[in-house]
Length: 298
Image (cartoon, rainbow, N blue to C red):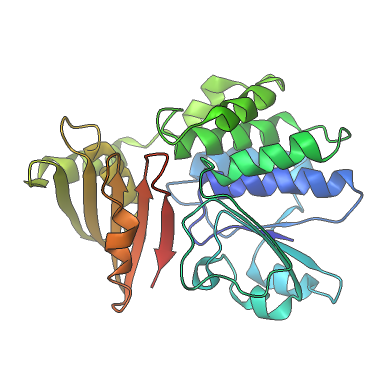
């Protein structure tokens, strides 16, 4: 079974699908655990559900717990945090755990993994999984949707190959392009509806600039998708001249979320981790090559 992080994005689901194809090539039963279909994944999940071959591949929490056996291998991708996986209970129920991640290591990491592929300088989990597929065995042939989801994962985490890229990033992208990726279709997965776009624009409009380089704003409405709205608004703030870091707060109802982004020397994850003593949900991304990005929940 393959599991990404809570409130999954295209990088977590894309890397999961890549690992699914790897497992199927080795004649192993494989399932992808996903319970997210919000703003971040709505368009992609709609496309995925139209593919008959994935009808029984995507499973929810109850199905996943029901399939656990002593021989089950659980692969956790795009996170290494115990409290941020899609189904935390699986970490207790499964003896064999593999971790594939690219985020800065945190204190609440999964300790009982039998194998960890943790590369902080990689652009994304999708980049790491693409390398595994490319160099693991010559027998793997990705379906077009799988290749496109991996490519999309790299695109999102690098802001269209602008930040946190290296030679390996472009080598992975070049390998995926061989599958005839439809870039227009990939871009459509990222489109927001007009209402969401207007909300994000309002958040950016009322932002305050601190020290001429840090943008801070808030999303006041109580919204279960506040974390996704805030993440997009924080990304948008970085497009403003001279802004090198951004923070946007939102109201999830039972907790407050904070999204932080950076394209300079400010490591927003270090700042947000100081809030761990409080019941806050945060996401962060430092987009310089040396400052790893990360997400977490406290």
